[in-house]
Every structure is written in structure tokens, then in C-alpha cells.
Length: 232
Length: 220
Image 1 (tube, one colour):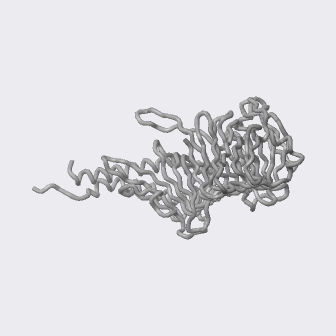
Image 2: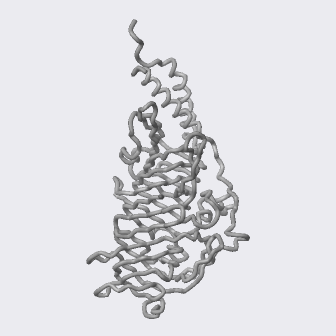
Image 3: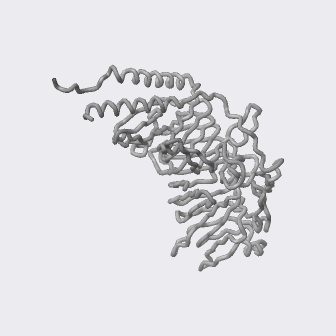
């Protein structure tokens, strides 16, 4: 009797249904603009890309992140924590490479309306733990890192400000940085990044988040955001 | 293990990883109310700084120094500084941990144009943070003030036919002559304890006083 081949859809169907149910609830929450999300990268870095990021009440401050090293161990990594009170993005891509049974695959989250120059993705109280960040020229004809308003360079990270509380006053230490000296930060009224690609340890969006065209793919091979055109 | 079984296991693990990853999502709809850390006991280490336009800022200083380094080219002019002013110095500033740093000078520029030979580095005990533009960058501009607090040992070379090097504490003695002047520079080595870029009171955004194209930021 020949060996059975092909995919056993009944066995995988249970998990697929669970995955799609999660995706469905995610999509519902995005559509109703009530989603607040924390995307935690367990131990490896994730790739990040956007055509444009416009952040109001922005801070970039050195901080630390604990990451899992496997077998219950953790270590501490220094990161540049970028945060903003209100942000708009023109396209978003976040991806992470995984290795299973010697095979490489990529989990890739993308969002956007496909149009350059529209900052269609909106979020509040967001933070990203940056390891590397690169800005280059792109289809929007823009390029670079820009700060606007009053910018302070050299504040302690725990003194940088982004979000305000119900009393209208800046919440102290929104970056959740170690208190004390040695952690360098830049605090600006507005931060503007064009055509940015980088690697992050984790991202967090603590307020309402709206992301048109949100899609999550599981793809064979190493096809992270770095290998793709800038999202728009 | 057969190829078919391997393929099915791969799909199974991918779906499990996706579901587990998505299960990290949690609803956290309200803005975080963090603890309120002062800058030292009773906020005693917060530093009051008077800016050139008469306004004030009260930062808690990190104590880490931003090194701005521009290397000399053969014939090129790698930077230009417009309307330099020596405001005050030497002064002593208090850092977040209560330590102090002395022999600092408060200087201002109107604008500062630097080419791709510039590098910015925070070289702290447990990390390096580098900002490396590989195209010309603009700091400041017409109507924008740049206030820096730099160490007295910071140096720059200015071009007057040839390149002449000076330390900031040496130049400060010539402030009556130098205030308001503009120079082309050959090289620069500044240790910046604190800097602020701003437009005078009454206007705020729209000029983007810091513009760094083609920049790589890296934490090591």
C-alpha cells in the first residue's frame, strides 16, 4: 500500500481556525479603532520599516530590555527607546525570522493603503526598542531624520516626556527608563523619520491604533521587511 | 522523517508560533500612569539653564556626553558655523545622580552646517550610541537658536587661509571680538553635555532645526 502524502487538513484545521479567529478579532478591534497592542519579541530582533513616521511629543532615550536567552535565562540589552504621544505612519512592516526543523520562515506584519504620502496608520502612546535605524531616500523624495520645535539633547532618559495624563501634565518617565544618570535622551516636540528601516527588540502601542490594510503572513524563507520595498 | 511529514510539521509549528505570538496581544486601552521619579531627592539635581533668548529650561541631565567629531579634509570645508556667541563660562552643572561637571562653556550658534565627515557618538560605560550621517546635515537655521554646553577642552580648527586650532576655553577669552562672527571650519571635536535647538518664544514648529539625511543610528 503506497504511503499517504499531502496535507492533512482536518488535523491542521483546528489550529488554522484558532489562528483565523485571532486574526478576525484583531481585525475587528482595528476596524473599531479600539485596539491597543503590545508586540513583544521574545529573544531575537525583528525588522521594521516605514516610508514615513511623524511623531508628536517625541523622545529617543537609552534604556534597557530584558530578553530571554532560553532555558529560563535572561540577559539585559541596551536599546534606544523611541516613543511618541501621537504618531502617524505611511506604511508599516514588522517581521521576524524563525527556524524550525532546519527550515527558515518569516512572520511578517504589514499595513498601509498603498499610497505614498498618506499617513494612514495612526497610533497613540507608542514605543519601539531600537537597535539599528537607517533613513534613506525613497519614493516620496524625502530622506532623513528631522526634529522640530524645541529639542533637548542630553536629558536623562527618565526625564524625557511624551504622553500627558488626565490632568494635562506630562507623565514622568513614559519611556520606563532606569532612573539616574548615564542614560542619554533626546526630547523633541516633533520627530519625523523618512524611509526608515531598522531592527527592534519590541514595540508597544498603548493607545488607540488604526492600521488600514493590516495583514499577517507566514512565509517560507527569509523574506523580512529588509528584503521588501518600503511599505506605503 | 519523510518529506511530507516534515512539511506538515513545519506548517503546524508555523501556525502554533503565529497563534502564540498573537496571544501576546493584550488590550491596554488607557495611557500608562508611570511612577513620578524626581531628579534626585526632592528634585534637587534638576538643573536650571538660561537660554540665549532669555527663556529657561530645567532638565535632569544624563551626564553622558555627546561627542561631535568632524575630521579635517584636504581642501574641503567640512563645516560652517554662523554667528557664534560665548554666553557664559566656565560654569559647573549638576547631573541627574548629583555629580557635577565643571569647566563647561555655554555657547550659541545661529546655524551649523556639517558635511558627511561628521559623526556623533555617546560613549557611555555600558553602551555606545552612534548617529552617523553620510550626507550633509543642517543644525539650526535662520531664526533658530542653538545653545550648547560644551567642555572647555573641546576644540575646533577654523580656516583663515590656513587652519588654526583653538580650545573653547582659550577662545572664550576673545569673546568680545568673536561674538556674532561666522567661520568656515577645518575640524571640530566637541564634547557636548547638553544642547537645545529652538525658535524664540511665540513660534514653535515648522523649521525642523535638526535635519540629518542618510543617517544610521546604532546601539552597541
